[in-house]
Each structure stands twice: as structure tokens, then as C-alpha cells.
Length: 141
View 1 (tube, rainbow, N blue to C red):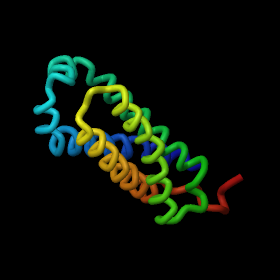
View 2 (cartoon, one colour; view 1 turned 60 degrees about the horizontal axis):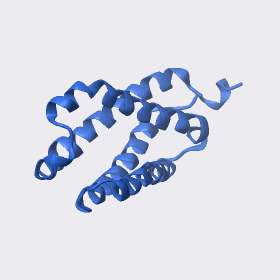
View 3 (cartoon, helix red, strand yellow; view 1 turned 180 degrees about the vertical axis):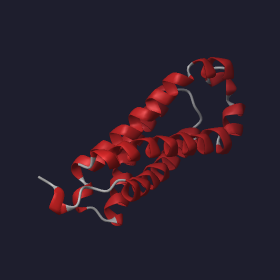
View 4 (spheres, rainbow, N blue to C red; view 1 turned 120 degrees about the vertical axis):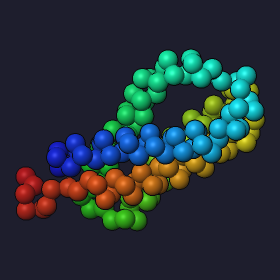
């Protein structure tokens, strides 16, 4: 692993997750959430818990990057990064399917969450590929 690149890639991934979540949830799905407001916490309640949201987003970004660095980066190519992102997205979106089963949300919402999450994960794989670089083979021990 390349610790210096890891310390750069994790915050970059975190910023990407926060920004893309804002586009997905704060822009694209805003009207959908407004139409189903009775299902969600109030804006005030959500803002009071924003630290937890950022903690979860950071945990997701850190896990994504560390798994990439430990298991895939050494021999990776752009196609590998896309496939890694796709499979990490499928893994995380399994929770979306289960959430749909147990919460009274219209099918439109988890469907949008599912596909937006896949796109987000694939793009995060590409971002991680370009930001994280392993140590050159001659420096590894």
C-alpha cells in the first residue's frame, strides 16, 4: 500500500461521496422526498444528526478506498476500477432492497436509490483509481 496516496485518496473519496449524495438526495430526489415528507425526519431533526451522516459517509469512503488499496490497486486498470465500483455498489445497494421491504416508501424511491448508488459507486471506483496509486514495484518490500 501507498500510505501517502491513501491519505489523499480517502478525503477525496469522502468529498466525492458527500457531493454526489447532495446531488442525488438534495437536488434530484428533493421533490420526491417533499411529496413523501411524512415518511422522513424533519429538516431540523436531520440537521441535528448531520454529524452522524458525515461519519457514515466517511466510513463508506474510507472502507471503499482501503479495500481498493489492499486488494486491487497493485494490478488494477480502469476497467478493474469500474468493475470494483460496480460490485461495491451492488453490495451496498442490497441494503436498499431490504430497506424497501421493511419501510413504507413508494417503489420509485428505492429504485432511484439503487441505480443512483450504482452510478455513484462506479464513479467512485474511477476517482479512486486515478487518485490512489500504489508504490512503484521497485520500492515495495
